[in-house]
Structures are given as C-alpha cells and as structure tokens.
Length: 297
Image (cartoon, rainbow, N blue to C red):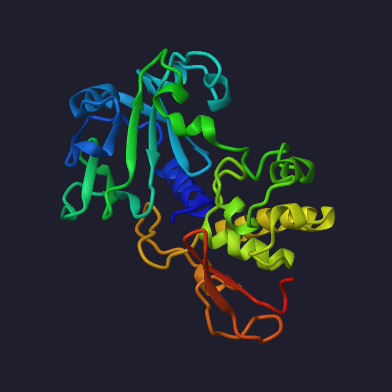
C-alpha cells in the first residue's frame, strides 16, 4: 500500500495541480529519503528553478519530467524515450512505499511530524512528502543520466497492466510451469507491475481462482480470466480514487473509496457479496490473503 490505483490517483492529481509552476526551493527533513543523488543539497539544487511538464507512472513509481526555463519552448519527451538512451531533461522520481503521501498544501499549513521532504512552488503552494514508516524514497535524475541507472527498481518491473503488451499470452509465459502459489506470483513486480496485496486478492476472487493454486496448475481459460480481472479491478479502484484502509490520501488529502466496494479484501468473516459464504482470511507469502472458498476453486 499504496498500489497502482492509489499511485495513479496521485499522478492524476499532480498533473492537475503542479504543472508548469517553477520550483523555487525545498527542504529535506529526513536525508535518507533521498535515494539519488546521495546529497540532499545536490537534490535540492537539481530541482530548483525547474518546472514539471508532466507526471508519469511506472508500476508504483511516480516520475516527473523537469525542464528549466519556459516549458513552451521544450519539445515533449515521453518516459519510454529516456529509458534506452540519455535524456536531456531531468527527472524527479518518487516511490511512496508503505505509508508515503504527496500532499499539495499552502506553506502556512502546519508541518506534520512525519514530513520528510518539502518542495516549494513560490509563496502560494508546496508539495510535501509525508511518510510515517520512512520507507519511501525520492530521486533527482540529472540530464544525460539514464533513469534506470539512478532508479534501479524500474529495470526490474514487468509490463504495466494497462499497456497492449499485457496479454493473456504474456501472463501465461510469466506463470508457465512455476511451482509457486498464484497469490505470491501476483505480488512479484517482475510478473505484473503495480499489483499488490489488495488487488491481487480482488482479481483472484473476480477470476474465481483460489490464492493457494499453483501457477503450473492454471488452465488457459483461468489465465485469460485473471488478466481481465486484474485490469477490471484496477480500473474500478481508480474510478473511486483508490483504497484507504489506513494511510493513503490523494494530493488534496482525500481518502480513496474502493474499500467499501471490495469483494474480499479486509472482509474476513463477512458474507460474500455473491454467495453469502463467510470470507476466509489466511496468510500466504507473508501477507494477509482473503478469499471465498465457494466462489473460488
């Protein structure tokens, strides 16, 4: 948590609020939040006087394209063009991890004790990175430095569920002949980028697959159904602003609403919305796992 829908919700909010405004400065309150470069001063110096032309999402990572000067004079460069060759623009990267929040606030708002980084946009607004558990990270990637060399996790990601390459054949190849529980496989970011505990449970319910099923036992139709279910549950959550069970807030500080719509996640002991059988909860791959033993086989 946050997972793909929450990160996508934040991305959309940031694109509405932060674009083409000059970054006038910042403050790093917890230095280990900055993963690259290794100096907080260099991080702040790198982003200052830049403008954000767009925010992108890659799995659970947020990537802001930064330019100096008037952005109207810049040619747009999309993320994929900067992966294989050095890009002349710099990048601001963010990973929220377990409890990270990006909040768009007035500078006079009291600074929360868990605030780790502040990015100033003049006198009217600032972007604050708040992170209770302190696992979140931020990066500034200078021009001519490949993004994946500065943010190594990007290179380990599978394809995104919303790109054309995420086909049933692709998913079948990722799961083929693996003696691994399907629930554990879905949490692996090298199998599906952005999927986490909540939506793995939801997708397995929607596709009628028990989380303890071995990947090698899945039939072609089950894999096709699973692919469709993954896309559908992620889209459904994005439409209602993601899920808030504990820490997640969007950039305006508003909770997500998918929790009230979930079929199985966080509903242990409650009746299944389809068959009214009590929802089961077990631990798999070190994570809580929710399912209906009647609807899932």
